[in-house]
Length: 365
Ligand code: ADP
Ligand code: ZN
Image (cartoon, rainbow, N blue to C red; front, side, top):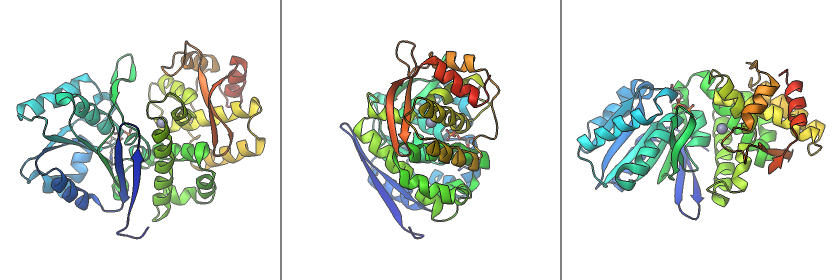
């Protein structure tokens, strides 16, 4: 992909069809296109305080001066992904007197996308919605697939909807201002995509993970586009997670427990990194994954520094949390595992003893 080139991925499901446009420095063009496509609409860009500050002088100011374009922002961070912020933003929309001819654009990371998407899903029973994800995690994962929502004190993402975007614009240049820790956070989902569905991407990462992490030209593009293709394909075949979509949960049963038990001190990516390690051991222990493939997975997780910040929890508390996971059926945790690199399987019930042994092997005593 050369400098001005764009890649387009189509996502077609039973209920929606949208394009994901990927490239570098495409943001100005994207806004021009949106202003043209939605010329009869009022455009509301929802962003967080960090993104607003960083992009104030170029992107945001240019748009703010346009008629019929509003920028609304909220305090950056997961703590804002709640009913209060939703209410605050909705009140602004009503104060502006906006009706159904409103386009909502999410400009930011996963928090912005989930929150703005949920507002778009419910404002006036639904208005058009565009995602412009600015973190690696949101570019490869949360901005597509149509899951939107907010947190409740009981747990994360418990209030929400399936509301696919009308379009997704991924400008890789946004990643230049992203802190390294946020890159690591997104790398986990790229590795996951490779492990569950794309052995060619996995081999590519084995040779080039450092270049991808350093956002080198060509390498980061390849990693993002390939992971998006995996996610698009899975979402297309199962939008609402009754079957195949569950393979996207590889690493997440254990990962989610660890993330919660760490009180979210551990990022989603790091928790999923550890989760993938444990679930890889489980797959090997139940005899579906060869030892040499397990070793390849561990090498890549280590190389990308995902296992560098160990979480000190006990195997028992992690297991207890997995059976409370909202994805589990009747209290029994089901796992999405792999029987080889690129071959995921889902709905696997694993004996607690095996889970415990695997956690112990990872140092959780
Ligand atoms: P996620 O990791 O799910 O995308 P957030 O939306 O909270 O979660 O984004 C993570 C952090 O990165 C937030 O503090 C956000 O303000 C910040 N952020 C988002 N995009 C950028 C960017 N392009 N450059 C710098 N910081 C960013
Ligand atoms: Zn995830």
